[in-house]
Length: 217
Image 1 (cartoon, rainbow, N blue to C red):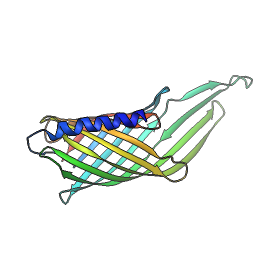
Image 2: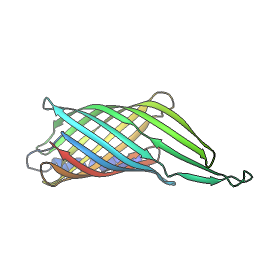
Image 3: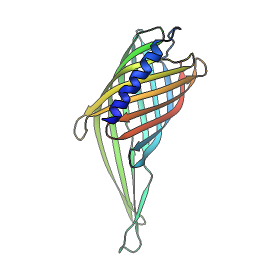
Image 4: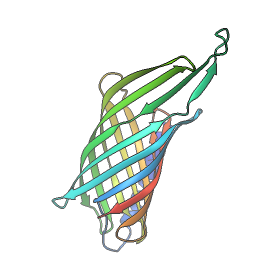
């Protein structure tokens, strides 16, 4: 609940700052982006990290389609097993989801857009267990997640764009409902290149931090 209240406060803070600006709206929804992603959990620290590739294409003035793929991995954990001749047991988990979605955006001021997005994610998980020097066994699972989010994206300065979204995700078997806040900053060097950073705060005590490069077209 504290995280959701923090997300609401951040959204309330970003929206008026963006909407008070006075120059023309110049936000691109056509881009390809490559990020480093780090997932952590409150009280437990590091969970997993890896790369994420995303892209978006806008059409008909107010609509976008987008897609993404991530490859996240935990550190390999090793445990000594007493009484088994010094064998070591190891474990490493991987998450490789892909996402497809669509969005609607409309200007609410001359520097700010209101954005609403709906997406489908196919989450693919694998857990590899090894008794080193003997054999390994992998266990795979997958599930579906539907996500909706809405919020603002706007210029804080001529080169700095911020977004603040609130959202909810849920799915089928084994997927719990999750409220989240998604916040980002984009610094544009020119019409093509930009540096992007963001954080997604979930009510399940996990946070996803991203940092990457965006190429707009």
